[in-house]
Image 1 (cartoon, rainbow, N blue to C red):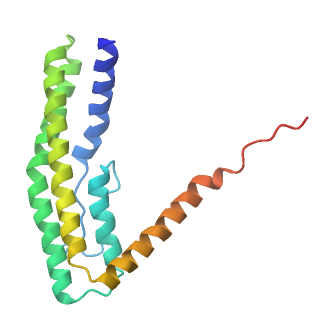
Image 2: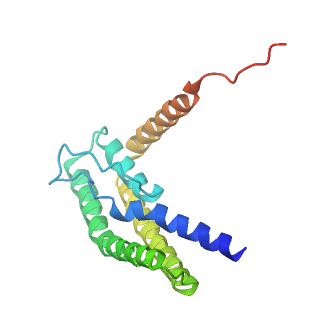
Image 3: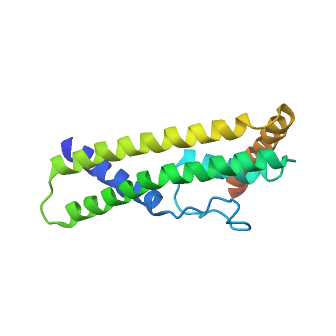
Length: 170
Protein backbone atom coordinates (compact mmCIF):
# COMPACT_ATOMS: atom_id res chain seq x y z
CA UNK A 1 0.00 0.00 0.00
CA UNK A 2 2.86 2.35 0.88
CA UNK A 3 4.54 1.81 -2.49
CA UNK A 4 1.24 2.49 -4.23
CA UNK A 5 0.86 5.82 -2.41
CA UNK A 6 4.44 6.76 -3.24
CA UNK A 7 3.92 5.87 -6.89
CA UNK A 8 0.70 7.86 -7.07
CA UNK A 9 2.27 10.86 -5.34
CA UNK A 10 5.25 10.75 -7.67
CA UNK A 11 3.03 10.48 -10.73
CA UNK A 12 0.92 13.41 -9.49
CA UNK A 13 3.97 15.58 -8.88
CA UNK A 14 5.40 14.80 -12.29
CA UNK A 15 2.06 15.63 -13.89
CA UNK A 16 1.88 18.92 -12.03
CA UNK A 17 5.39 19.82 -13.17
CA UNK A 18 3.95 20.86 -16.54
CA UNK A 19 2.02 23.62 -14.80
CA UNK A 20 5.14 24.96 -13.18
CA UNK A 21 6.91 25.14 -16.50
CA UNK A 22 4.05 26.76 -18.39
CA UNK A 23 4.86 30.27 -19.52
CA UNK A 24 2.60 33.10 -18.54
CA UNK A 25 0.85 34.56 -21.55
CA UNK A 26 -1.88 36.49 -19.76
CA UNK A 27 -3.22 39.16 -22.05
CA UNK A 28 -2.50 42.68 -20.99
CA UNK A 29 -1.26 46.04 -22.16
CA UNK A 30 2.16 44.63 -23.14
CA UNK A 31 0.87 41.39 -24.62
CA UNK A 32 -1.75 42.53 -27.11
CA UNK A 33 -2.68 39.90 -29.61
CA UNK A 34 -0.91 37.08 -27.79
CA UNK A 35 -2.84 34.04 -26.72
CA UNK A 36 -2.06 32.41 -23.38
CA UNK A 37 0.25 29.42 -23.37
CA UNK A 38 -1.81 26.27 -23.92
CA UNK A 39 0.32 23.87 -21.84
CA UNK A 40 -0.93 22.07 -18.75
CA UNK A 41 -2.56 24.54 -16.43
CA UNK A 42 -4.47 24.18 -13.21
CA UNK A 43 -8.16 25.05 -13.38
CA UNK A 44 -7.93 28.22 -11.28
CA UNK A 45 -5.25 29.64 -13.56
CA UNK A 46 -7.21 28.60 -16.61
CA UNK A 47 -10.24 30.20 -15.03
CA UNK A 48 -8.45 33.56 -14.89
CA UNK A 49 -7.28 33.17 -18.49
CA UNK A 50 -10.80 32.25 -19.58
CA UNK A 51 -12.33 35.23 -17.78
CA UNK A 52 -9.76 37.60 -19.31
CA UNK A 53 -10.42 36.22 -22.81
CA UNK A 54 -14.18 36.44 -22.36
CA UNK A 55 -14.28 39.97 -20.97
CA UNK A 56 -12.59 41.23 -24.13
CA UNK A 57 -15.97 40.63 -25.78
CA UNK A 58 -17.76 42.82 -23.25
CA UNK A 59 -18.22 46.53 -23.71
CA UNK A 60 -15.87 47.62 -20.92
CA UNK A 61 -15.25 51.19 -19.91
CA UNK A 62 -11.67 52.45 -19.90
CA UNK A 63 -11.76 52.46 -16.10
CA UNK A 64 -12.85 48.81 -16.04
CA UNK A 65 -10.13 47.83 -18.52
CA UNK A 66 -7.46 49.52 -16.43
CA UNK A 67 -8.71 47.92 -13.22
CA UNK A 68 -8.96 44.46 -14.73
CA UNK A 69 -5.53 44.56 -16.37
CA UNK A 70 -4.08 45.92 -13.12
CA UNK A 71 -5.58 42.92 -11.30
CA UNK A 72 -4.14 40.52 -13.91
CA UNK A 73 -0.71 42.16 -13.64
CA UNK A 74 -0.85 42.03 -9.83
CA UNK A 75 -1.76 38.34 -9.98
CA UNK A 76 1.17 37.67 -12.29
CA UNK A 77 3.52 39.35 -9.81
CA UNK A 78 2.13 37.40 -6.86
CA UNK A 79 2.17 34.06 -8.71
CA UNK A 80 5.71 34.37 -10.03
CA UNK A 81 7.52 33.46 -6.77
CA UNK A 82 5.07 30.60 -6.16
CA UNK A 83 5.68 29.18 -9.63
CA UNK A 84 9.46 29.56 -9.26
CA UNK A 85 9.29 27.62 -6.00
CA UNK A 86 7.13 24.94 -7.64
CA UNK A 87 9.65 24.60 -10.47
CA UNK A 88 12.45 24.24 -7.95
CA UNK A 89 10.50 21.50 -6.18
CA UNK A 90 10.08 19.67 -9.48
CA UNK A 91 13.83 19.75 -10.05
CA UNK A 92 14.38 18.38 -6.54
CA UNK A 93 11.84 15.62 -7.14
CA UNK A 94 13.45 14.68 -10.46
CA UNK A 95 16.84 14.49 -8.72
CA UNK A 96 15.40 12.31 -5.95
CA UNK A 97 13.73 9.96 -8.42
CA UNK A 98 16.82 9.54 -10.59
CA UNK A 99 19.32 9.28 -7.73
CA UNK A 100 19.16 5.48 -7.69
CA UNK A 101 18.02 5.28 -4.06
CA UNK A 102 14.44 6.21 -3.31
CA UNK A 103 14.03 8.46 -0.24
CA UNK A 104 10.37 8.20 0.79
CA UNK A 105 10.66 10.83 3.50
CA UNK A 106 12.19 13.43 1.16
CA UNK A 107 9.53 12.78 -1.52
CA UNK A 108 6.78 13.08 1.10
CA UNK A 109 8.20 16.42 2.25
CA UNK A 110 8.28 17.66 -1.35
CA UNK A 111 4.69 16.50 -1.87
CA UNK A 112 3.54 18.43 1.21
CA UNK A 113 5.40 21.53 0.04
CA UNK A 114 3.85 21.18 -3.44
CA UNK A 115 0.38 20.90 -1.91
CA UNK A 116 0.94 24.08 0.09
CA UNK A 117 2.09 25.93 -3.03
CA UNK A 118 -0.92 24.72 -5.01
CA UNK A 119 -3.19 25.95 -2.22
CA UNK A 120 -1.46 29.33 -2.31
CA UNK A 121 -1.84 29.54 -6.11
CA UNK A 122 -5.54 28.65 -5.94
CA UNK A 123 -6.19 31.30 -3.29
CA UNK A 124 -4.35 34.02 -5.23
CA UNK A 125 -6.07 33.19 -8.51
CA UNK A 126 -9.54 32.88 -6.96
CA UNK A 127 -9.14 36.27 -5.29
CA UNK A 128 -8.10 37.85 -8.61
CA UNK A 129 -11.04 36.33 -10.51
CA UNK A 130 -13.42 37.54 -7.80
CA UNK A 131 -11.90 41.02 -8.05
CA UNK A 132 -12.32 41.05 -11.85
CA UNK A 133 -15.93 39.89 -11.66
CA UNK A 134 -16.60 42.53 -9.01
CA UNK A 135 -15.62 45.24 -11.49
CA UNK A 136 -18.31 44.24 -13.97
CA UNK A 137 -21.81 45.67 -14.16
CA UNK A 138 -24.82 43.39 -13.70
CA UNK A 139 -25.46 43.47 -17.46
CA UNK A 140 -21.85 42.51 -18.21
CA UNK A 141 -21.97 39.66 -15.69
CA UNK A 142 -25.18 38.35 -17.28
CA UNK A 143 -23.55 38.46 -20.72
CA UNK A 144 -20.45 36.71 -19.35
CA UNK A 145 -22.61 33.95 -17.82
CA UNK A 146 -24.40 33.51 -21.17
CA UNK A 147 -21.02 33.17 -22.92
CA UNK A 148 -19.95 30.57 -20.35
CA UNK A 149 -23.16 28.61 -20.98
CA UNK A 150 -22.55 28.63 -24.73
CA UNK A 151 -18.94 27.55 -24.17
CA UNK A 152 -20.09 24.61 -22.03
CA UNK A 153 -22.55 23.54 -24.71
CA UNK A 154 -19.85 23.65 -27.40
CA UNK A 155 -17.48 21.67 -25.20
CA UNK A 156 -20.21 19.14 -24.49
CA UNK A 157 -20.85 18.80 -28.22
CA UNK A 158 -17.17 18.22 -28.94
CA UNK A 159 -17.02 15.39 -26.42
CA UNK A 160 -20.02 13.73 -28.03
CA UNK A 161 -18.63 13.76 -31.60
CA UNK A 162 -17.21 10.28 -31.38
CA UNK A 163 -20.55 8.92 -32.48
CA UNK A 164 -23.13 6.74 -30.82
CA UNK A 165 -22.05 3.58 -29.04
CA UNK A 166 -22.11 0.47 -31.18
CA UNK A 167 -25.32 -1.55 -31.04
CA UNK A 168 -25.62 -5.28 -30.89
CA UNK A 169 -27.53 -6.73 -33.72
CA UNK A 170 -28.74 -10.06 -33.17
